[in-house]
Image (cartoon, rainbow over all chains, first blue to last red; front, side):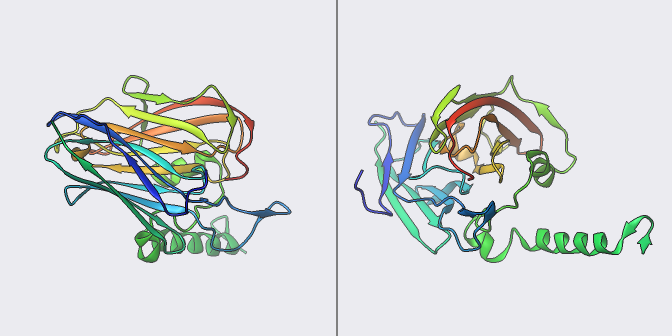
Length: 110
Length: 162
């Protein structure tokens, strides 16, 4: 996969009924570095990994994840949300080097 | 020299640990997430104790569905999903789902903080697992009640020391 780092992809179901609960998936292209080790001891440096993920729907933060180096490369998270109104579902990934990667998907309930 | 059987060194070590614990969830660490400053390397029992203290953790097999492969070819990318059967109303909801891997040097993989607007206590992620062992999911209800389930995953190629 030759995607650029920081690219965010969000997948929401194509048809959603208003008032129902939908499941979405969000992915960021990111190395999510694991802790380097040398002679069994870990290397003292600021490892670059995604440490926080915020899910925002209709301008309201509905979920927040605290994440670590023990999430795989290109972190991908699934979650649920109650579909109330048409609007934007936004997911923002923050990493330990000040990186901020945002993606959005339009939710259009039938 | 001992003070009621506690050495001076232990007193200092305890004070330092308390200072770190007090500073940890705030400031920059908070702005970038609860795990941004790497969690200490420790056995899973210690992590559970650090997170939940002496609060009782009930068996969650009736309320939590933990989905993981039995055998993970690549420990660097293991699909996980957790679903907690619970209402998601302001009166009663799942506040957080914790995922811990017993064999990882830093056992807490992630903490998922949820709100009633999620409609369903469901999360999924791609985990890194260091070795064959149990993966645990702990659900914390809004009233503080804790439920836990675990499942063993056989890891063929380690996700390295995550």
